[in-house]
Length: 82
Image (cartoon, rainbow, N blue to C red; front, side):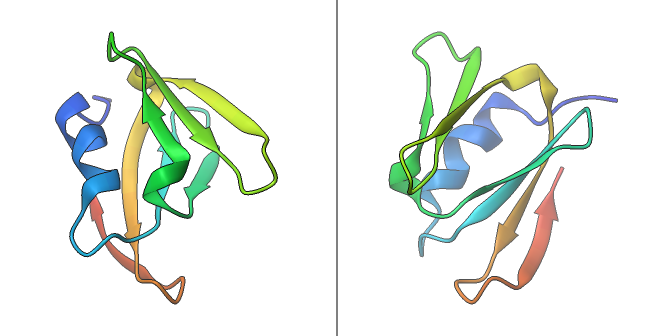
């Protein structure tokens, strides 16, 4: 299965209007990105870092991101990006 493109990952946090989204990883893990300020892509484009409001964070290899699920601001699902 192909992973999400680096371009899609770079564009998701900057969506207009800004919306939360979930990342779906190859191992089945889902990680919510509640706000664009809580996500970073390292300069090499290899790692995707998601910070949580409590200060914790997860570092993911971009190649393991399988899907981005855009959310409405009320938490409902929007269409998925593959």
